[in-house]
Structures are given as structure tokens and as C-alpha cells.
Amino acid sequence: MASFDRDFERVLRTAFAGREFTDEPVTDADIGAILELARFASSGGNRQGWRVVAIRSPATKTAVIEAANGIVRSYVAQGRLGETAFNTITPTKVTEDDVDAVEEASLSWYRALANAPVLLVVGVDLRLVSSIDASLDRVGIVSGASIYPFVHNIILAAHARGMAGALTTFSAGAEAEVQQLLGFPAEVAIAAAVPLGYPTKRLTKLSRRPVEEFARWERWDGPPIVS
Image 1 (cartoon, helix red, strand yellow):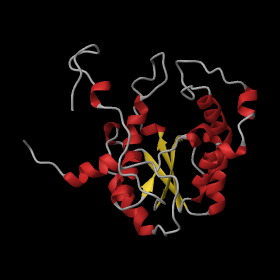
Image 2: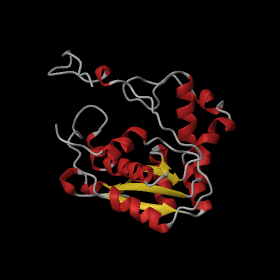
Image 3: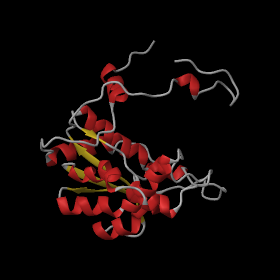
């Protein structure tokens, strides 16, 4: 059996979504080192269309987070009905009244992201993306293969340095406003906003479904793969 890196396995098993941070400073060198590792992500045709704006300004972080308030309200309202938010297969039953009824306190977890020492807004240059499924009669997903491996690498690299981050996509729902706030050109889509910092608490055991629940041999109805 080939050997494997136990430290790498530990990072994969314990890289949690961190949304609450201490006041410990995140240096410019930290951000540079994280992005230095993240850039080795795969992308379609190795076109590397990711673009990143790192934000320290409290006012700018707050403006980016606040831009997606309406999106987050809808997300919370749909969650209260047990829906998968913004799903393209099952229509929502949430009404405008349901969205309006979402209390300010229910948004505190999201607004707290503006308190992260650094907020990375990640965009992708759509001119460098191969959207192979664009002609299919469903929501496109292939384009994400050229940006989200990079974003996930940011999370992993931060975790390996004792920091934490979270992949949030609410800002994509407020794309035009975020683009204007940060000066993004129209052809660079907003893919994610990633808060980074040193977490107030560290999770060491993540809850995930076992392999046999989602993987099969040979066919959709084949025998389960057991890890």
C-alpha cells in the first residue's frame, strides 16, 4: 500500500467552517501565504480565472455583507419551512410576508462575518470559464469547477496555519452591488466571500454522512462503497 500524509488527512478531516474570530491579527504575510497555496487548485484548461480582493476596512466589509441582507433573509425564511434555499428543482413556498417576518436577530450570525479580520471576495473571470453544461435544461454547475477548488484551497490553507474561514456565497446573489462596491468589472462574477481569522473555538470532529450513503459501485443502483 502506498504511504500517505497523515497531516494532510488531518487537515481534510478537521477543516471546519469558521465564522467567529478572535482579535488576533492576520498579517499581510498570512494572506499572501494562504493564496500562494490556494493558487495550485485545478481549473478548466488551467485558465486560473480566479480574482481576489482582500478587505480589511471595517466599512467596506460591512457594506459587502449588508449588500446580501435580502438574500440571507430569504435563505432563513426558506430554512424555517424546511426547504433547500434557492433550489431550482423544488419551487419555494415562502412568501414575501415570510421573508419580511425574519427578525433582525436571526441575521446576526451573518452580519458577524463583517467582524472577521480579513474578508476575501473571490471572483471568477467568466471569459476564462468553460461552461460545458450551458445548453442543458437545468442550472449550470460545471463553471464552478473552475473556481470552487481554489476557494476550498483557501479554507484548507488557512486551517493548516491555525486559522479558519468559511465559504459563503450570499454575496453572489447581490453581485451587481458587490461589483460596484469593489470595482469588479462586469465579466468577473462574484463567486464567494470568505471571512478569515483565528477562530474563537476549534472543532475537531465534523459531522458528515458515511461513504456508503452516497457512493455506489458501477451503477446508480449498484452496491455501496464501504470506507
